Image (cartoon, rainbow, N blue to C red):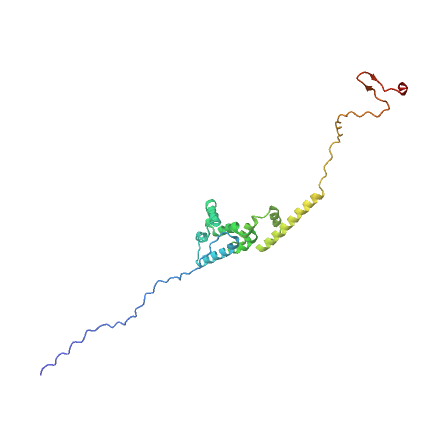
Length: 237
């Protein structure tokens, strides 16, 4: 009896590996680029200064500038030709240390172009402490007012209180000066009389020949032939 045929070979066994889902490679993350409106050039006019500093500081904040040199260079790039650029070149030549301190640089800009009456309104644009603000404020005060402020205890708590106190002392000082001048006018010393001197006699002009007083004497008539007095009545008879 013929033997049975061998069974066909079985297919090779392959290890079944579960299919893995392909993970996409993430793209590099990029921060969105902020777009800013173009700043107006600062021409040096006092009325433009506050708006100009607002725009510069807002842009510096949104661009996350940290270094003072970068902040200063950004501000300088919007200074218009003329007085602002001339002022900057003078700072660069004579006070280059200001170029490395943004807040001091802005303070010098305010000092040069701001109206003195509104200088204190620009202080919020400067990140200054109370001590620095007071030091800058005291630089232009009179010695008499500084002495009065030193005598005040306790010291004012805010910068505005310092300003009010300074105005009060300045008004009082002005009133004292006016009172002193008025007192001096009423008590002005009279000039002291000098040594008594006698007036010198004035020279008299030479007297002219006075006319002779009238007289009853009849003058003698002079004749070419003889000289005689007028004839009497007896001689005429």
